[in-house]
Image (cartoon, rainbow, N blue to C red; front, top):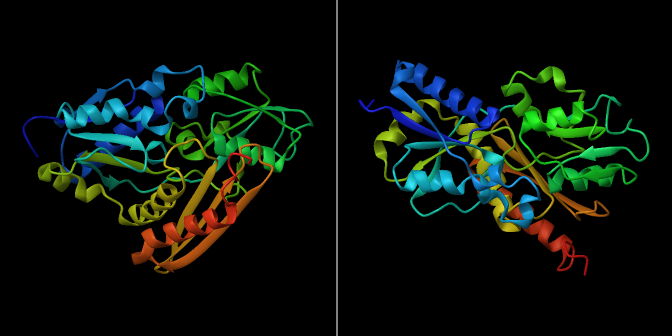
Length: 308
């Protein structure tokens, strides 16, 4: 490795830092290096600054990546570590997702001091979520529940729940596990009734396409299976909607060399949804994701999301 430390760009939340440290630790182990061969560079993003309204109203997913990607392009950092579900489907010219770490649990976790599951919440209970997908899925399963906007990092959301601001919330199981907070989980939501966000549970690494030395360093920590699954999921999302303005879920799984993909799109109020799925060889991951998205577009018709 180079004599200068490898600069790892990340957001400053506890979860983002845990993901950056996991990346650093995997690189340390792969190359036999010490901590001083790396520098963690914390970058505040627009998404971290805007806490008073839904991201879908102010620019969507790119708000969590824009400033970090600018630092990459300006060569102030060498790699960026992201939650894959925060990544827009179109990246700036010159940048690419060049490595994926082995994927964690993809499921959503239910957290509540008042009920053991979403189904057991009392009539009229208040559930907090900032995700349009989770909001729509909650309303689909429990139209009697009041779903409210619930922004903030993971610790903030846990504190609001403990303080009684809401009766329950849903969070990505992967994030809770990475922070050692599994004990906070009341129950897990099965993927067959609650499809996760595209990329949920996967850490991706973004770097400059022309930085061959860095690409070589990332090779030993890259997990090809996670990339294949994400290739399908991101292709699916790219056809439908690359932002977080639409309630969309999608999950690719691999078994015996075959990839299975299931996708869902919902009306924001949960009153209607369409699902589609497809199977095929892993080499066709992108086309499988695209085919499911096209099937959903056909089923939705023109006015599905706007209500016209």
